[in-house]
Image (tube, rainbow, N blue to C red; front, side, top):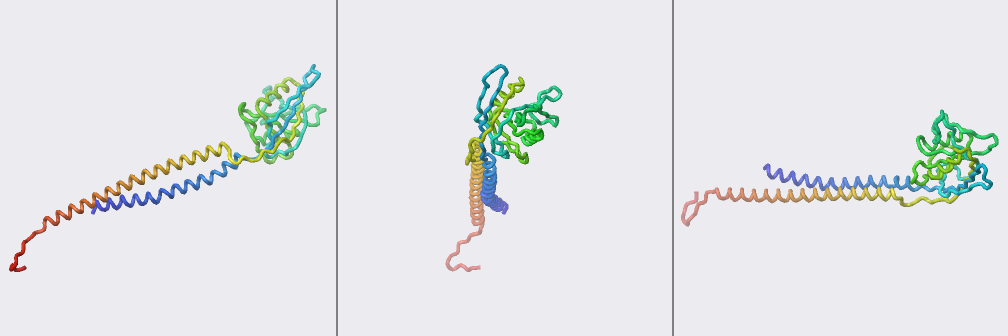
Length: 270
């Protein structure tokens, strides 16, 4: 009766869990595999390094100061070409320094004798495309964007649709060094040359972390499902054993209540 139904229900629950568990795990595994290539592709694009030579002509100094920046990086959508020009920073807007180049009022003062010039801008507040397009609108031949995080290396900028203008990123430290000269009205010349093509990385640190976390999550879910499965199996086995014992006891009681009679030889059977 009811107890047998309970045992059957427990068995049905266990069977359902046994069927549903692997299905859930397979679905989660497929989801992880589908996300994994995307993460890896985004983190492993090839890029070109930029070799940058900077010449600073300080007033009263006979020999110009020169230094080299080896950690520059061309933008993904930038032409990979050499360029040379004088470095210019945006003019202040209403008396406030404009280092970002995001404001529609961003302007550059280009001396009449300058044929080619390079805009120096800081990363942040708007997209790389907006910064580069604004400098291109004012006829810059190149844009050098310096990072806004002191401990971070240059990244590969994405800026589709910016045309033939060259775009390069450098570190925050080097960018602020150059800016300090420009703020003193000291002339800075820059030459940008193509460095080394860096092939895509097959396995990035971010991808490794993502896969590790996914594996741990799958292991936790698998362990939880196995624990649930064995608990249900034990419950089902105990319910079945109890039901069998009750049936056996009921059979014994029924047999004990039966009327017995000893039949002797010669008795009439009714």
